[in-house]
Length: 127
Length: 107
Image (spheres, each protein chain N blue to C red):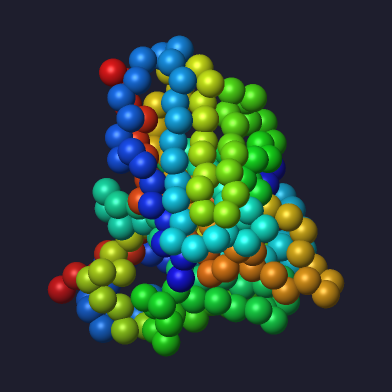
């Protein structure tokens, strides 16, 4: 079964850091770009960051650029999001998501729909 | 950044009726890289349509997508009880972005 399981969320004070993880199973992890998408309570979806199969292409939303860092470890089938200088407006459910189509080898695109999503991990930034 | 605007915000319909959801882009979406997702309360989004008009695996044929450039549409031909949910459009031609969502509720 294709599965993504996020972890690492919790309650954190403004200005502090948190690292999210996403464990992938059931597919060849290093054949696909991966992404983080967040959803504030009662709000819509916001793309946060994406990373190509070999980390050669990385993108961030303007709202997190310079504060968040995406990374992956293909040997461990894992995706990460290091979140620094957290703000109240970063409070959200954070999902990891997989690109729909294979993009390995010479492909570095982050342009695809997301066909598999995890269940999300909640991050609350509050004093 | 491409801004997506969905309309209407809420659609009140009865089971069996046809639903038409719109998604407008602030600039042309390259290669029709436009997707539609369904989200039910407490669950992750589910991919319905990609590349503007291709149905994802396992999606019933009552769901269809159309459009190009800056105007896209998701149509549900006959609403089933399980179709009442929130629907989001997403463009992935440039840095990905989502619309604000359309809630399809039971009338």
